[in-house]
Amino acid sequence: MIPFVKVLGLTILAVRLPMAILGCIAIFVMYKLLRLIGDKKLALIGTIFLVICPWHIMKSRWGLESNLFPELMLFSIYFLELFLRKGKNYGLYLSFAFLGISAYSYGTSYFFLPIFVILILIYLIATKKAKISQVLIAVAIAGIVALPIMLYVIINTLHLKQINLPFMTIPRMLQNRYEEVSNIFGSDFLKTSITNFKNSIKILVTGEDGLPWNSIKFFGIVYVISFPFTIIGIVESIKNKKTISINLWFLVSILLLFVVEANINRINIIMLPIVYYTLFGIYTLLEKTGGKIVPIGIGVMYLVLFVSFINSYFTRDFSFATGWEDVVNYTEQIDVSNVYVEYITPEPYIYYLFYSKGDPNEFVETVKYFNPDGIFNNIAGYGKYSFCNSSLDDSYVTKDTAVVKPKEEVTRIDRNRCKVTEFERFAVLESK
Figure 1 (cartoon, rainbow, N blue to C red):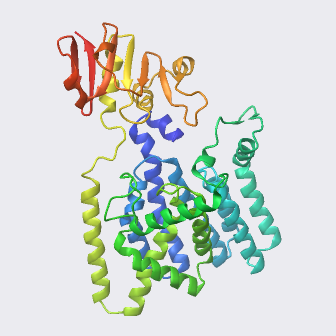
Figure 2 (tube, helix red, strand yellow; figure 1 turned 90 degrees about the horizontal axis):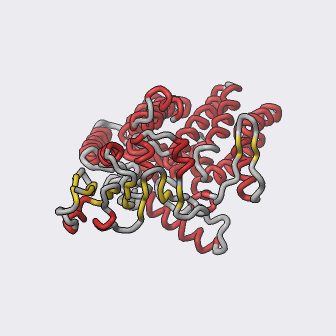
Figure 3 (spheres, rainbow, N blue to C red; figure 1 turned 180 degrees about the vertical axis):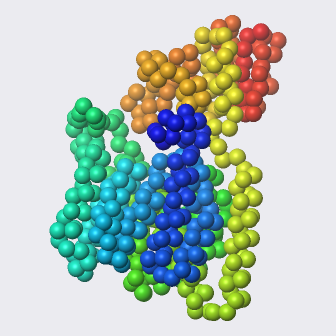
């Protein structure tokens, strides 16, 4: 996001644009990858399917850093296949460079990448697809690229001191986020692993994880009706042994399902293999049936699903931030020394920092935490703002104080002494 914020300023567009661009690039790379694997028909089916895929559309339209992981893996697999099928040596090196870069995208990569890299190296050496010298260069490239994040994991797992360099800090954090979302470090590993796997499979089959910004009911990840195609694709892909890299990607993703407390974001690394198997299943069915009736039927079915999904998706509000911009702008302008803000949505201080574009130095100097040793360090206040995780009544309102509350709760406010300014979901209370 940094170059986009530098050019466009701290705006919603600057925050969301990088993921949207990456999603568009992924469509092009998917086409190129499928052309390496098969014919133009496979590539066209796959490209169209990725374009209309609910998961890919939804994840490409919001700025969640963890959703970089699947696309960076896609780029790595493309260059690896370029090396395997076309003998382009630079493909191997770029593939491992992208593996190194992907280590920075999400904590699940700390489990996925070591296993995937080992399996790929075994395959390259056992089949003599690459020389030992090429393998060593590729591993060195990935290692150099990923070295800072590997040091970060070592420092925070072994509780070592942080590293301070003139151009970089490798920090010792208060808590390990990757330990929180994974059960590798848990005391009840076996039981939790089975639960995690069951929940993950349920999400993959139903396409739902209960989070409306990740999937929409009845549409799911790749449309719920696609499940038979996915199974056909898995079986055929394993039988023809032509996509070893994707099969290994899928295999290691399956292992990940055991160690991660599942939602669609946390198991996102399995999504593109699922997309691939689904489109490959469609392609296989079309190749075996022939004629025009089946292709037309499948095309019409997915067109109807896509139009229905778009209609459902773009008529809903999935934003965490709806209404906050107006509230922040208003409370920034009013002449009071203290503003109490209820935790109407999670982490409201984020929106104040984002929309007010205040001085970061003031934040650092004045910030107060609910729990200074907590994993997320939720903010209790900074500057003139205090963030409260309990309901506030009008007794907090004085000539020098304002209160931000949910709009539905203002019916209990004494309007004889309070001025109430209402916004989309919020109300600001001031002294009359």
